[in-house]
Image: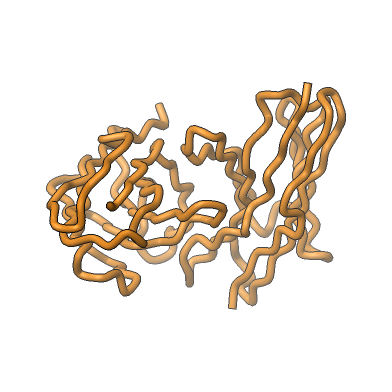
Length: 117
Length: 113
């Protein structure tokens, strides 16, 4: 079962709000990812967690704060976002990401469409 | 540097036509993996196929087929007898152990009834 779930599906927030995006997988994967996708563009990597530890931060502004409470869950906390942060936020997971096996297939969730007013 | 080029921005076909989506990649790594993902209007990226750099065998899965040619650094995707449900954006992607997953810019396929 290659399923990654994300909640909520849609989110509208003001620039002063605090909200969180949630991602869950039950495939036993030990690597999880956040991507941001603007309209008509490919996904852009934001963060990578490997074995619940942050391993990659692609110079993402601090108003985005990731959290990996356990191997199945990944959160993205949002605070003081800007209208240009409006996008589709995709979560993905892969089996492993240790050196030598970083190329495992990434399975994506349905995404959260975020609108910042 | 790693790069994936999908030169076709948008393709329109009528149902039952065959269509080929092109993908050209650049990498200096000898070991790498190539992927195709489908993104329907709902937004989810659906994994279609993964090939490693040492396996140039073409692959067929139902109406889908993939042609991997290292000599031309291409990994093209053909849909036979296209259907309306095939309408989506298709991304080709490249991954090696030294880098992150690199996506092409995508090809939007519209299949009209």
